[in-house]
Structures are given as C-alpha cells and as structure tokens.
Length: 203
Image (cartoon, rainbow, N blue to C red; front, side, top):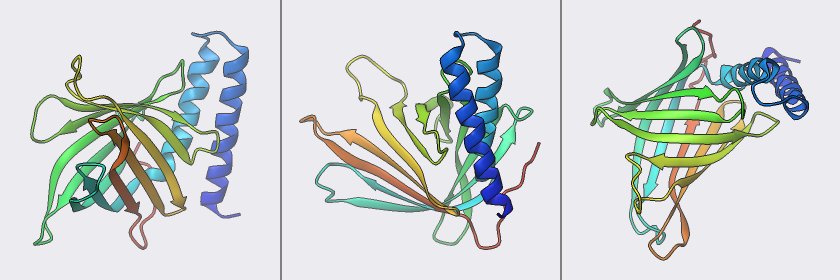
C-alpha cells in the first residue's frame, strides 16, 4: 500500500467514526466537533498543492455558446489549519497567470457539512457560498451553491457535484435552472495535478 492509499484509507475510517459518534451523541457534543475536524482534514489533505484546471461554462440549457478558461489552482492550509484556502488563477494567452479568486473552506462542527465562502477579485464583497455534504468515501461532495448577494426572487441556488475521477484528477459540476425551471449543466471544472507534483502540508 502506498502513502496516498494509506491516507485515503485512514480518512475513510476517520469519517466513518465521526458518523457513528454523530448518530449516538447530541448536537454540541465535543466528540462531534473533534471528529468532524478530523474528517475534514482527512478529506482536504490530498488536495494540498498545485492543480492545472480547465473551466467550461454554458449560459443556457441549449449549450449553444461555451466559454473555456484555463486555470491554475492552489490549495493550502490557512489560519492554523482551520481553513483550506483555494487560490484561483486565470491563465492568459501569453501564459501569464492572474489571481482572480479565493475560496475559504471549512467544516460545520455540528452538521459536518463542508462550507465555502468565495471571493472574486472584481468585487470586495463575498461572491458565493457553498453548503455541501461529504460522502463517507471522502471522494464525492454534493451541495448547493448560492451566488451573492442572495435576494428574494433572485437567482436560485445551483446544485454542485464534486468528485475524484482518479488519484490525480477531480471534477466539479454546477447545475443551474433555466427560466422554464429545467435544470442544465452550467459549469464543469476538471483539475489535474501537474506531473511530478506532490501534496504537501503547509501548517
């Protein structure tokens, strides 16, 4: 068993233990908070490091127009390891990278949901939020993405499906709703770890 397989196996055991304790303990029990943090760190640790990504965006359900954007992303621990920080860089045609976004990711110690606050370089306000539920295998995440500011009668939340494709690739898809209520694929983000890149802890 290699190091990555061992860490994934330990992560699954950590989350399974957290789920068992969560079912036996009441909300606010310190055991839930501690095990949710352990499970979160086990989920996030394999993401640490640099990623080459490709973002595809469709404006409507007919997929008549698609915008493709190459990106670079970096995950690292922040604030004493309590948050996972995701830095997003757009890759220009000349090869230069521009820092365009930042996501701060954490875990709700009571519900064990993965929470995210996203920020865009074009505005000082928070751009998006995520409330996601992590599968016991730590390789799938489903949730709701709300673009900000959230207003009554405004844009409804988008559905998110995130997963590992293999040990070096991840996929994130968001689904929006057209005016007629039908759901359509809005964005698809495929990220691949650069050849020779290793996940390293920075805390």
